[in-house]
Image (cartoon, rainbow, N blue to C red; front, top):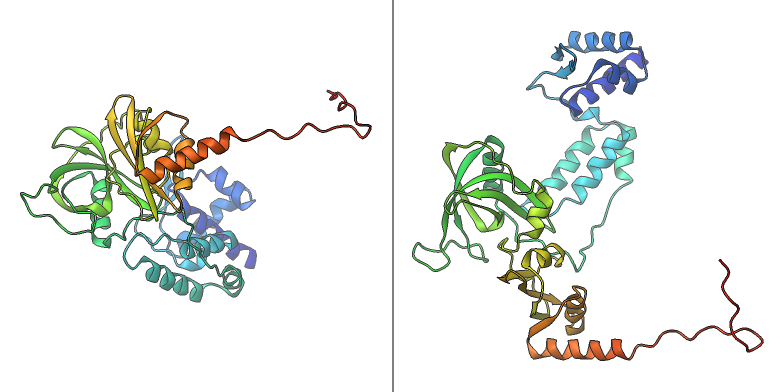
Length: 345
């Protein structure tokens, strides 16, 4: 009886984790015969869980829509995943850190003793890395509005906010209103981006969600195909994402003999790439020293001009002199003072 109850909980957890399961795959996961798996499904139905049978060659079983599962159905690995996820959740939404802590406490209270002990073993201290450049936290209402519109294919009317989060007045130079078809929400380098088709100028664009003041327009749209079909490449190679330089002690810029889409894909977080022409771009970035900025620029292996400020140009010259004066290590000598022995293949 205990074995049957354990399998029923495991079966319920499996059904909740995926939209549809073939009977054979369920039986394999439960390590039982298909007949036993079918009997366990009937047990769950007797307990009131709505499990739908899907007929046909691609059929199987699915958990009925709208059924709420208690959080006790986590297995050991799922409990650890929840503990790690809630403790390392990025603070890119107002109040998320407090909400994540409350959620962890709630889940912890209803866990069985064994799983609760596993979660307690993973009390983490999260330290900030200097190369993390999270955007200012987003209003949960704005994030929900964008996410809902993307899911239900609803047009959004948006106004672009200033970098400090304030709304410009109509007529200001930085005021812009647009009608967007939101397609994808993306999190990259601590920033939320919206990939959308801009109906105003009929172009695909990448927008910083924390720079948008969205509201639904009440109009639905049909999904479009993203240019190139690669979401990650499109976001990382779009130079005009609304980014602004991160705050650093040393901040400089240079003109690179590379296209903006190439530089944008490999530029560090917190930098800004400006399109100049088909083969040139300007990169603005910061670091803890001018030598650090120069070193990052050197990784692009391209001609650099228009270095600003003068401190950055001087740092690049110093780096060039150091690299020019670098000498290879001395060749090893044999113990008898002669030439080193020939290497063996």
